[in-house]
Length: 238
Image (cartoon, rainbow, N blue to C red; front, side, top):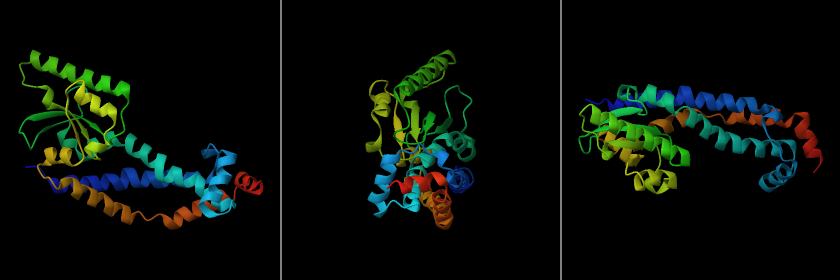
């Protein structure tokens, strides 16, 4: 029987150890201006736009916020998806080339061969062809081995998001190649059999966010970045 509590526990542990700690480490190194590709014009403008002045602290803040709340987080989660698969969904691991996990679909009862993706905008044009190629190879192999595998059993599972969030590249997998893409609530429902599991997973990860209060340390990063000669010089040009 599927241990949903263990999946939630493992997901929480993964998010703490592999995501939150990496996020903190990546933030702490941003005390060095060389970590940024600074546009001297827009940095001063954005500092005034955000805070009403272009003090070193204001400039440091507008440099840090996009990295800390945007690209850094996306990169960490995207590169960690394989580790998430191994540590959280390891019991579903597949030995089939091009397939991340295999599981019995709790909605239709058929075995699914799944490639996992992190979010609704994480593939490009080339990825569509790569995914379709892997799935075609699996179908050919199944025929050789007299196994029942249809297009409907080869799926892309997107860990978070909603169907309306899916990029056009994901939609092409279904429209052009006829492979289902299950995202967010539907993916986790099919995996666990629990239509509420996705919400439970978000709650579990949300509890990590509460514990990961980095506000005081972030203020210290701002102060140290603002104290560098490069940022002071940029501020003086206002």
